[in-house]
Structure formats: structure tokens, C-alpha cells
Image (cartoon, rainbow, N blue to C red; front, side, top):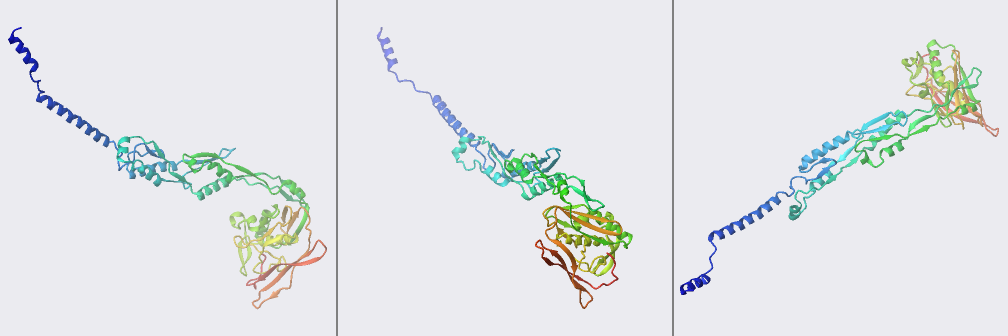
Length: 445
């Protein structure tokens, strides 16, 4: 190796290492800046996924209405639409045998949803998260369903059940008897059981599971119960005792008045009263109007004789009143006429006027009683039958001395004379009657 060669080799190993070029440094700086830019972009990207403060979080429902991303106002409107749809759902009641149905919407039952608390709760979801929780969760589905409280109007529910009860009810039919010409009784028709709605049991079935169970509509089979007749054929078989009777004459009455007496008697004849039951003349006979067959005839009104439909029916109430007194029954309501009538003694009459004046008495015996009436065009008779004689015996029914006043009117007290079980006789005050002075010639009523 020559010296010159040796020198060249040495110079190569001792020379300064080569410097990095400027272009390399600039490239690295650009890369770092770019990397930083990527990091900032990522933060910006995540910040854009945060739940909005002016809308409802994702995955939130009110009922089955999706309110995700909606403003409070729009969410409330959507919830109202959901509620309206469900309030149109029907509650259906079905009869067990006939399968007859009664339907009514939840809205008609006064149903309502308490929407405001549900909308407020939906709005608050996610609003209280801090920045990092919101950054982390982003658009996470919350899968929250808020069910508004549902309520019914109890009064409307009861009214609805009342209408159904009226439609379902089949009244029990009492056995009926008829009065034979000889005065005895015979069976005319056997009794029939009735049915009625068991309101409480039906309501319990309807609300089983709470009011919320009605939201989607509901079908329920109604509950019914039997209604037993108050008087059976067996009871009628025991009513062979005549408790009291009375007869008045109306043979001289005009034809129209006779028609009215006969019509009223036909409605009363065959009436059965259970123990404790009250007889109401106006309820049994009904309104006196031409459409029901009543004729115009004389009647009393405020001390005057006037014509009116049903004139003459007061003779039927008076005759029945006298029979009830002699049957020792409790008189509940009785009024005298404005003027004395000709067919009974003063103080022994009983006036009636539909809608104003009624005659009522109660079956105060231990068993059922039967009321038989017969009007043959000349005489009117009412008989009251029971299961056994009263322990007291009515000896007579009469009025005391008539007392007159300065205006020409009069008053009188009526009495009942009875024999007690121990044989003693007792006089009882029955009623007090006050009559006006007649302003026209008295006429049969």
C-alpha cells in the first residue's frame, strides 16, 4: 500500500458525519403539525356528537311515541296525539249468555293522561351530565319509556255502569192471583226469577290490574245475579184470609165516569204487596190522560166542580182506603177532598190527583197481601187478602161530629175502633179532615 493510499483511507474514517438535510426537518415538522391537526379534529368530531341542550335525548319514548331529538313543544304535541289515539280505545262489556255488548271509549269515560310530568322527565334526560360524560356517551341510545299516569272519572264510570245495569235488568215477576166471583182467590200466573247487573263485581273485573290496564282498551264479561220474586205461588196459596173489604155505589154515574172507575179498578186488581211494601195509588194507576183511555168527567178542584180526564177515580181510592182501614193496615199518606163526597161519610174519603196528591198504605202484616177489585157498573168493591188474621180486630171506622166554621167550611176527625188481643176495645184517631164551603153544587167525583 502506498503512502498516498494510506492517507486517503484515513481521511475517510476521520471525516465529520454528514448533516441531515433541511428538507427532512421540514417534513418532520409538517408531520407533527398534521398529527396535531388530527387530534384537534377528533375532539371537534366528538363534541358534535354531544346530546343537544335544546332537544330530547335519543331513545326516549312517551308511551309508544318516539320523542327523540324533538323540542319540548313538539314532543308535547306528539304526546297529545298519542293520548288522543288511546282515548279513542273502547271498553267493552259483554253479557255472559246473549253475548250482547256495550262499548264506550276511554274518552267518554272521562279518561285522561297526565302528560306534563312525562314530557318534563323526557326533556331532563341527559341534560345534567357533565362535559366528559356527554363526550363519552355521545349519541348513546337511552332506551327509556315514560308512561304517563292514566285516570278515569269515577262518576262517568258509575253512570256508564248504571246504563248497562238498566239494559241488563230483567225484573222478577211475582206470582199473580185472581179474585173469583165468589170472593176466593186462584193462581193466575206463576212467579219468574229476574236478573240484575252485579255492579261492584263488574267494576272490579274492569279495573283488575288498575286503571292502566284499560289504556289499550279492554273487554270484560259482566257479572249478574238473580233477583228473586217477592211473592211466589206458594205464598199465594197461603193467602186465603180476608183481612178487610169495602163497597161503594156508583150506579147513577154518567157513562164516562163509570169508564174511569172501571179502568182504575182494572189497574189495581191483582196487586200484590210483600211485607213492608208500600202501595202508591198514582204509581199503580198512572197518569190520567186521554191517550191512556181516560174520559172527561166531573171532579173536584179547589172547592169547584170541574171536568177533567179521569174524573171519578177518587171513588176507587176512597173505597180502597176504607178496605185498608178495615184490614188494619198502616196508612202512609191520605188527603181529604176539598169538599165532601156523597159515596162515603164525611172524613172517610181519600183524594188523589196524579203528580200532586197520592194515596199510600203499607203492608204492615208478616206476609204478602193481595188486593182484589171489582167494578160491575153499579157497585165497586175492594177486598184485601192475607195469610192470617190480624191479632187485632177492626170493629168499625167512623167520623166524629162535624164542626163548622164562619166561612161555611167544616172539619171532622175520623176514628177506628179495634178489639185488642186481650179482648179490650180501643178507639184510635185515624186522621183529621178539613173541607171548604162548596162554591158549586157538589157532584160525584
